[in-house]
Length: 288
Image (cartoon, rainbow, N blue to C red; front, top):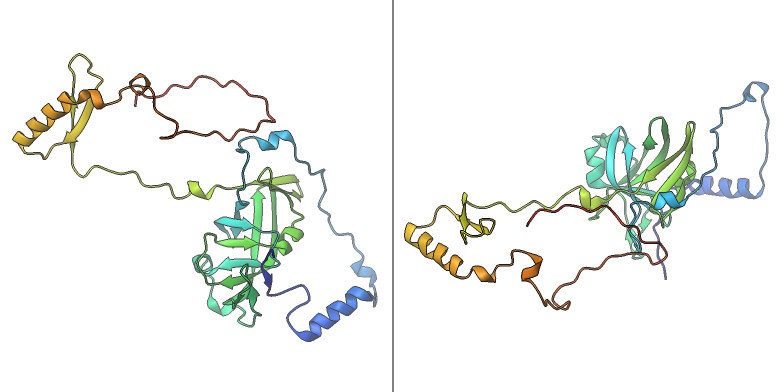
């Protein structure tokens, strides 16, 4: 069984009466009347052909199974870690992200039906609220209002965009290219998938004290190590003598590491066999 997110507000509304009216209107559509002053032409969004081509694959490492995560503008805030989920019938904003928007709790609708989660469990949302959400960059930018369920639970995302918003903006998705395209008044716009791993880079380790450089062999001044400056003088001298005696155990270049078995460590490149290899320009690396 493949579970999806379902429940919450729908186009039919929340009451039984509104749901029945929605069903009757779907089966028996009726036109009650048309006023002349309401027949004015409304501006239409010009549609250009929305296509996906080979150039859109640039920068994507294949094969992959990455989720579609983008950035969007919600209530004039740039929000990251927005998951595009075509299996969700509702939009979800999680409690921590909602608090960051600074919206008053009085604007939240507390009368909301439970939500059926991926695992099949019923989750009671905190409430629902209508929020503006924008995609793209000006001038190719589109904005719409939609309902969001506020859910308080641990998650790796800030927002989940479901089918309702994707349908409103006429989004076209390509999970293969990790790309979402949609029409705007100024032409087709696209949203590149954001890599959440780049938002919080791992902090680099820092030494606990000042370091000094010690050359292990005067004939090779580029072969050096660093040691702490707070060592006892006798211990420092013994330590340096020991390092110089064992200098041969250090690998200063690739030539010093012959015969390493691939079972110890190996590097794998995810390359599609369907693409022709391209020779890149030579890159210069540090001696380290």
